[in-house]
Length: 458
Image (cartoon, rainbow, N blue to C red; front, top):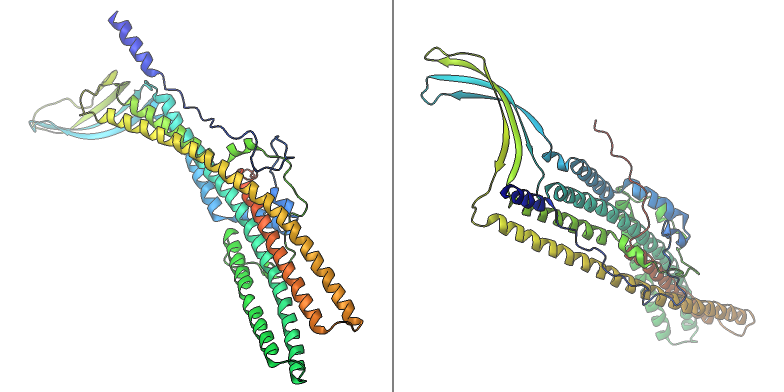
């Protein structure tokens, strides 16, 4: 009866605690999504292609191959996989070869000993499953870190490219404004010289020209910074010369969100990493609880001894074999093992709270990005209409000047207003592009290609 009770206790202790539920709720529908957005999940592969810039496609391909942060994360994933593949080997039989020298306590003889010993600790009390959980959590965490590096890289390359091309567009428009201000200042100075206008008008025009010159510094700083950051993202020291040549500003255009994939939120690297941390913490809790119970295994050894120094006759080359159960029963340690188990329990609770926080943060970022994208779409449409109206006004002013019904000053004023309207539109286009980047990063980014196999050691 006592043996049956002991066996029942042992088998009960071998069971591992179930994993906590990792299905934190996500919204069935986004509050800030357009009214016509459909609920099915969307294919996010190559989402940056909606910006219609082939140069960006090439940059992202190069960045995924050459970025150093992604390469580091890939190496750490390989390391985690190497270790995880052998995580439970400690509970398999092992064999050691050993040598030793032994002196009799009475200093009457000394021996050189050589032999083999084997041990096998049984993975009882949930040790097998808990060890697997720790390895799985570490590998999944490294996988989430790699995906996070890839998602952040794609988003950052897209962001920097949008900022670079937008700054170049702004520089071109500011140069046009400066040229118009120069022509306006020249015309006013001519009128002042002819006594047709007071000198203060020429002074004001000169001040406007100086402000137009000063405004060029901001986009030029942005061009330099964006190009240099792109170089870092692509793993190179200097930006490509082609980047510094003005190009077309990326633009979403008529693109609108047609699907709001709430399930994609679970693919966020931050959430995947939090899930991996819960699995790892659950495994460590299981191992801490396992350490409260006895360690049970089996051991054997065979050894030979050679008498290398003696003060009396003794036999040489003697061998001996031993085998039997190995039981290590912890009796008293001032509560350290129990305290360690309680500590791991709290760490698991903390990991669960971090997982819930990661889901909440993902929901919040997605809602904000959806709201920003929709508001900026309306702003871009309004400024497009304003820019078109300004261009129409400029054409009418030029026609009036050709008919002698207006002056060159009127033409330059109208041109300056038109360029400023285009400048506002360029900023609105860039803001909407960046909100688009933020949305898909909030949703977990696009599916990344499988990382290349690690390079063989030389």
